Image (tube, rainbow, N blue to C red; front, side, top):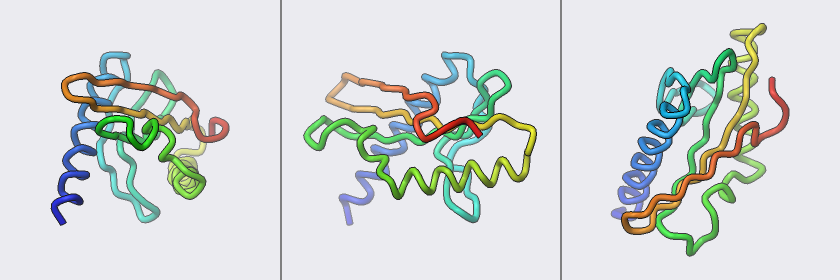
Length: 122
């Protein structure tokens, strides 16, 4: 069980880093860990006029490969469902799905931001 707590702690740390990173780029953070019927949005943000669903993947070290590699087909499907929910709620709103991969390696942090990482804009 300690491993699950440790993973959650690393995930929370990665989301906090991603939130600061996005804020620094001028994104307006609307929410973090937003719970919906169909799943959870790590970070919900606004980039100019676009609503952005941000999936954050964090690893400690790169022994399992890059963090972005953890967004598999199943996760992409779930992210598309979340985007569809927002599109139904705000039909005129442009919606995009971004993935941020964060690799923590001691005190070094590597951030990779993939805009529109899952399909087309909605």
